Amino acid sequence: GEFPVASGAALLLVFCLNSLSIEWLLSRGRLQNSVGMLLHYINAHGSLAVTATIVWRYIESPAVGSTLLFHAVIVWMKLVSYALANEDYRTSVDFDTHHLTLALLKDLEPGASDIKYPQNVTFSNMMYFLFAPTLTYQIAFPRTRRVSIFKVVTLLVRLFIVVSLFIFLTAQIITPYLKSLAKALEETSGRFTVDILAEYALKLSIANMYCWLLMFYGFFHLYLNLTGELLRFGDRVFYRDWWNSSEVSAYWRLWNTPVHYWLVRHVYFPCVRLGMSRTAATFSVFFLSAVVHELLISVPFHMMRPWIYMGMMMQIPLVWTTKWLNRRLPGSLANAVFWLAFFFGQPLCVMLYTIDYQAKQMGSTWIFDNQFCLAQFVGGSCSVASHSDEL
Image 1 (spheres, rainbow, N blue to C red):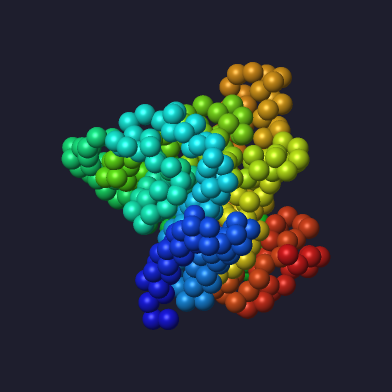
Image 2 (cartoon, rainbow, N blue to C red; image 1 turned 90 degrees about the vertical axis):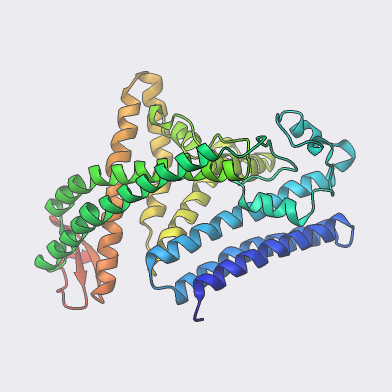
């Protein structure tokens, strides 16, 4: 339609209300557990599928599409957690297992520790979880006593500065580099050579690192803390000291704790309980992460490419490598390997998607060459490389 972003946002809210309605029917015994959980899964996955379809078909701007799809992924994860957590509360209600969780929490609202399922199945409880800076559902969350206006103002000021710096770096450094890369490809008839790869990997690496750090600080430290302060959300451990990671596995555990907790609770441990080995469960976690990361990039740019997926799956051998290095040579060597991979891996993905996007704009595709040319556009106005296999 005419207002795809507004329509997509409204539909996400509808899917959340659907989830609440399904859980209400389950809590009253009007749906069998198997039927209710099937409806929960259809509703949760439908929220992501419908939004991805809207972005793919109706939203041309990659920035706008990425923003809407990013929120859709968050809603999808919350709906999955809401369904699975309430199933645990519902099926073990006689054992009051939620008290095991509440007993570990401090600073609960007065009376919150006495809440039992299905008293939590309310509109206000669902809406609080929807907007709270967490992805894993529980009956009650720790709360602060009041909102600090001083914290809100300082977080807003810092967030404004960080966003301004991010826009400046993107507009003044990264975008000109990417335009220069596109021009270099045109001048070489679409040939993606080793020289171009090395030159632009070095050019982009530093600026990309600054942008990534600004994004991390702005979102995980400022925005999530701002949301937590406004909602008086007490559990604000959104990241840990990932920069000291001597193993890649430690980085993935520490840099994004809300997603890590969700993956552990709803993917890793269920896989282990199904009899899968820890290695297979870890592979499942990385596979799901890779698919979602690829979805967040490919759909808004309207081109299905494997680069983010491949980059994520390559983390698995990198996990084993850094673990081996850390055991053999404990110290900073594994941390250096982590930073090198981090420093050059992201710019490489940025370049690959830029090349693909440029090829799409030119009405071309690009192919790998078995000589010194890594890749070359074919179709459109560019010539076909010899001795090549099409990607």
